[in-house]
Length: 118
Image (cartoon, rainbow, N blue to C red):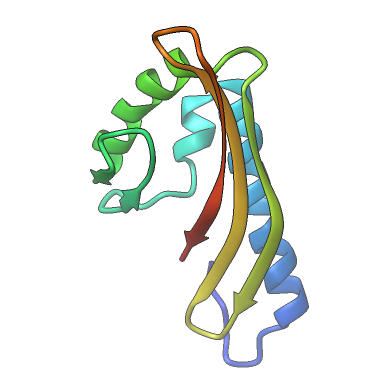
């Protein structure tokens, strides 16, 4: 997002919130292009399940097969209690994230964990 020195913090926060929500909608829809739409080519993401880190957009793309084979339909992937801090040069999102799936042994797992996005 290109933010000028005279930026509108409320508008920036709303735009960032919409981006995160669009990402979550794309995950629920299993829309790989939508999932990757706002990630840079040299991104670094720490996530669960393993691999715990994805370096680069291609590595992140590969994690989608693992996630979608683990998650049930409909995919549960949502952000709660989202806190956004937007400045002229950088923005941060902290939120509780909820996703659910089924382990290989059939156990249903619901994860809710803190998520930080910069």
